[in-house]
Amino acid sequence: MRRTSARFRLAGFAAIATAVATLAGFTAINGATASAAEEADTYVVGTPAGYGRSTTGGAGGSVVTVSNATDFINYAKSSSTLEIRVNGTINLSSMTKVASNKTIIGVGTSGRITGSGLNVANANNVILQNLTLSGSNDDAINVQYSTNVWIDHNTITGANDGGIDIKRASDNITVSWNRMYDQDKNMLLGHDDGNGSEDRGRLHVSYHHNWFDGTNQRNPRVRFGNVVHVFNNYYDGVGSYGVASTEEAGVLVEGNYFENTDDPYHCGEGDSDPGNLRATNNYFTGSGSGQTCGSVGGVPYSYSLDSASSVKNNVMNGAGVGRI
Image (cartoon, rainbow, N blue to C red; front, side, top):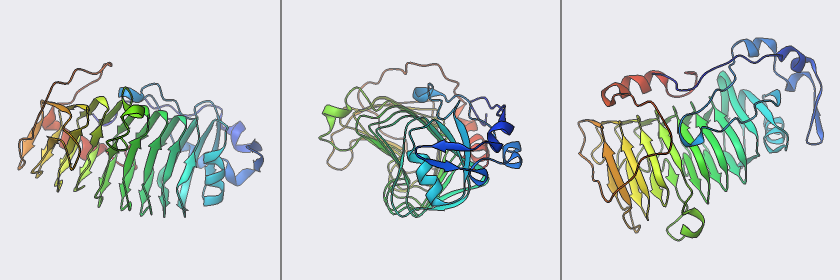
């Protein structure tokens, strides 16, 4: 299984491609709208699985294509509902705000963001898809005080801090079909041990069909989120540890494929107290057996679970940019 969501071609594109769009006080003509050739190879996003299943992003809004940082930043922070197509390399100098009701999607394999990352802050209903994010001077993707977010089919490498960090009362998020490599602190869930007043009852995140390709730690590292669902991911050569459950978290680790990973999952991390972790139906080769603790309930949604032994092939053939 390479994808859990449906794909649909965008209708009515021709009218958008020739229109003049006025958005958040500035006007984009011709070059900032999508071309017919780009549309022919681009699919509108379908529906995610898991906690982020209600996310629709910029569906129903205008479609624009950007190839420079100025246009990208202006559209990303706009209050309008937009599908922003990235065609080319966007060089950012600092974390760029992504506002509500946005889809940011790479065109083919050409959508690249480098230099810094994306900050989904105080936002609702955001999709980030089919982007290569490399060499950020901070996080590649930061999500805080935000709900209904889908991070899907991206390739992430070389961020100075986190690959995908989710924190500060964020909720109802799916992280799926991403490939991460050359990344140390990969995926943090929960700001710090003292942030329970914001995070208890929130931080519901589904991580599925991601390729942790030699990422060292935090795949993810969880505080307070309960139940966090980690399923059908491929862990290959993970150095320090895979999943850590801490500080009242409840993590269900299900149907994953662990290869050459000495410490697949454990309870507690650093100065953080142990959380709860339940593991079931995982596959191990050249790896440790992992540590479980406490009790963890089920997730409040239906989902399709691949057999753990098939996950490596499915994820390697489906995760990252250009695989949707």
